[in-house]
Figure 1 (cartoon, one colour):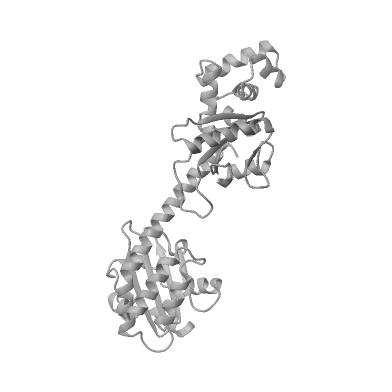
Figure 2: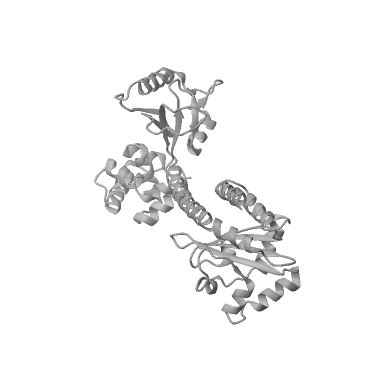
Amino acid sequence: MRNKITTLTAALLEGSFEQPLWSSFLEQLRHLCEADFVSLLFQPPGWRKNDSLILSANGASAEESLENYRRHSYPEYDALRLWMEDGEPYPMAAMIAEDGGKHKAFFDEMTDTVGITATLFMRVQEQSGVDGWLSLARRGGEFSAEVKALLREIAPVLRSVLRLYIAREQERFAARLNEETVQRLQFGWIALDAAGLILSADPYGEQVLADGEVLARDRDGRLEVRPGDMQRDINTAVGKLAASPQAAPRAIQLRADPWLDMLLVQARHRPLSSSGSPAVIAYVHGDNWSSSLRESQLCEMFALSASEARLALALCRGKRIAEAGAEIGLTVETARSYSKAIYAKTGARGQPDLVRIILGSILALAAG
């Protein structure tokens, strides 16, 4: 018994890293309990069964297993939740007796269609309210008392694993949103060691490196800067930051049009990794304000005309009134007239304020 619990516990702990999830645990549970079919369902409060995470093992393909589960698994979990004790396995006979026969038609269907003669259902609930439903079914004979005892023993582990999985999924969701926000703002990072070797990068950092016009990997995997006259300055800055905790961050303009800049800072966080320890983080930021979509967004947010929106974007790129007007085909007088309207509609008190309001607004998230 103890060996079985140890085996299943290890499989439960490793299951969240598998694909499909918990496949080893389900297959081992099926084997140890002499079951023909095992399923695991994670169901947040208010979610329908088919919207929840459904996993199964029955020797068939994943698709067949999932369809079998959906067709033959009792859907009214809300009714079961009212009387099923957390962590206690229940046979189908107990459900039929408890609910006045509502489960009988379901059990009869399972018997007639797939020859199931015995089932066990167990529910565990983690602290946020998400339920984990473990179901076992077999053809021929009943489940033994040892199987029921085994399920009771692994219930606390299943509850803890469910809690960890839910917490990790929530962190992943938040991380994906944060990553998407940073990417839409055209910010990224590249992690370097003390010698300038590139250890890792986020998607935008990789995009800048792959573009290769300004930053790239050299043949040894180190950060290469183009044109080369900036290479020495950046190497020196990386060396200073890596050597001294008191070294100040270094900001560098890499390209003016389209804009690309970089901020070199000392690495404060060092992940457990075999790829090396980062000494410096190079934050990179690019300008992606060239899409006509920006113009329509500015029109909607600030009630600008199309020409005013185009002029506003040109001004945000640092151009003077005459330059910005000429760029979009306006005379100096017309451009000045439009700029007054832009400042009035946006509330800006001048060009620097206009840049702050527009580039610092939520519209910046529309990039990408």
